[in-house]
Length: 169
Image (tube, rainbow, N blue to C red; front, side, top):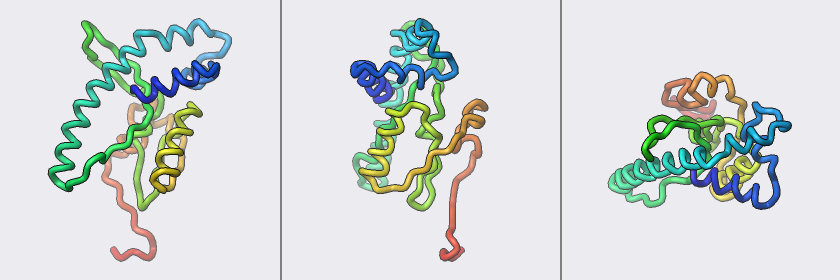
């Protein structure tokens, strides 16, 4: 969430207010006041709280991965923007506003990822995954899965495996 907020705020600082229309594309651009309300300090706080919770979870996973493999820095941050509810500075419920790039499918050096409606998110993801890691990336519209609260991976609830024609079974 922190990365998403940073990317959005950088775009706004550079005068690109269309990022809010991309973020809330189910609202018409003629409602600029509504866009400001939706990207309010409350929404920022929800994303900051979600980020803190995720950072604690990530630390636990990093330690477990290091113990199992000796691998450090096993994670790459991706931008996700959350909706949610918080009371008394505690996050009680949150969910990804857009299809989450985290909820992707990874097969044989190809990542199939929910399409990110926000261009600055897409650009960042392409830079990190394709340019830095050299992994192929394909965006797919998964709004139907996201509306059902599933996205690509969770909607199938499976462990993915893919064998090419040249691989033995």
